[in-house]
Length: 182
Image 1 (cartoon, helix red, strand yellow):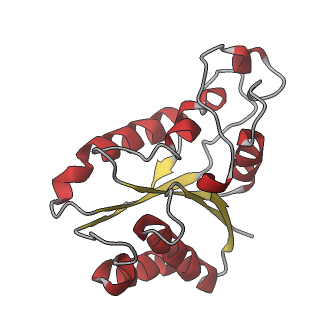
Image 2: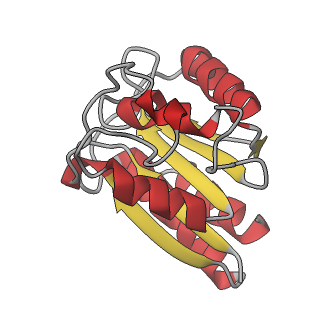
């Protein structure tokens, strides 16, 4: 059974990136995927302290917060959907700590291998130009390569200005089509 995990990085419940990611998951469910969601705004995830104890074995991270739940969900999934609004040409502050705390996945002796997983970026921005996503896309592409994940063609919804605007746009239809194509 194929599992897809939506990692929702919007601070706003029902924000544009979350709405589009949920539509991708809905489309994937129509094709038999088992879907799950982590809404990062509802969790306590602290920043990486670069202590590097995650490289010494045992727990993937010594920080006592909700990241252990995220690690477990990531391990269970076949495809990860990273959803974030575009803030200052990069990730939201909710999703950035997840990337920063991915160090256990890259250590040569890691037991948390991501090489058999695929990753999809779903992002939304009020900026009308698709070039606005270049910084985020560079970060995502580089992270996928480093972690060994296969990157699925991203959904970069530009020109969605207000809350819930994505649902009324052509991006909403494209998100559903993308989910069904997985």
